[in-house]
Amino acid sequence: MSDRGFQIRDQYAVHFITCTVVEWVDVFSRKMYADILIDSLKFCQDNKGLNIHAWCIMSNHIHLIISTNGITKLSDVIRDFKKFSSTAIVNAIRDNPQESRKNWMLWIFKKAGEYNKRNKTYQFWQQDNHPVECSTEEIVKSRMIYLHENPVRAGIVRFEQDYLYSSGVDYYGNGKGLIDIIFM
Image: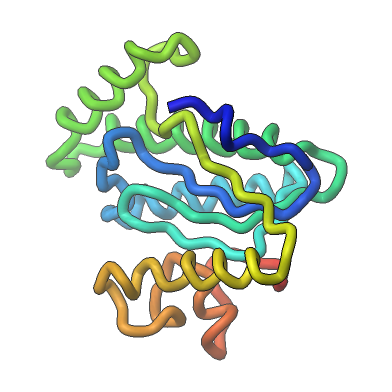
């Protein structure tokens, strides 16, 4: 599917995006791969000008409400994040002797890569990320609720603040999450 209907028009505005693993493979059901995403996001914060307002990693996708420092284009940061994280995660899968799904996952990523001229070998992320500009308080609120309720709707936790891989604890709990956020 093409991104033509979903483009980042204002590169410096706050956006809600979703990055999804090809074929909806449940990669992030393993902690070590979710941790690679966390590290990649932190790197983008420290080195690419990424502002994270809210986030949630599910088993096969990540939701983000993000912006940049006003210098770097948001699409450039997303591109770099997806490129680095995909390479790091595929390498981690390939090098993990305990990964029981290794051959199956690598086969899926390789097949997806064969259909995409932009990739050399593997495609990990779907091409699109369906950016939605958060131009009003209503859009921000609805996307924030959707993002944080994702693990609740999936039956993983009862309350948003109980999910480790999201900013739910920052917004609904009394603690601090795994990633520094800029509150909205």
